[in-house]
Length: 92
Image 1 (cartoon, rainbow, N blue to C red):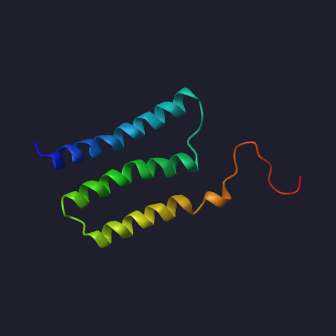
Image 2: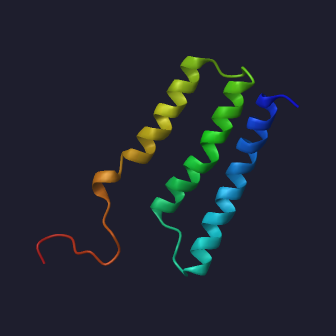
């Protein structure tokens, strides 16, 4: 097997493994699945897919850049609005 094939196998395994570990961590700590968890799961699943499609020359460089920018914009768009659990909002 070529190095490219190994990189693709690792990338393909990273998504599901990361998702399983994320859900296991949520189950063990008895925390709910919130917006941050969904955003993290999206990144875990999309980045390896984009990597593999780029390495197989299915996506060109402009498309890869657009997709990565879209994912980064999606994840970073709500950073300023983050309110940790238990924090108060407003002038209470």
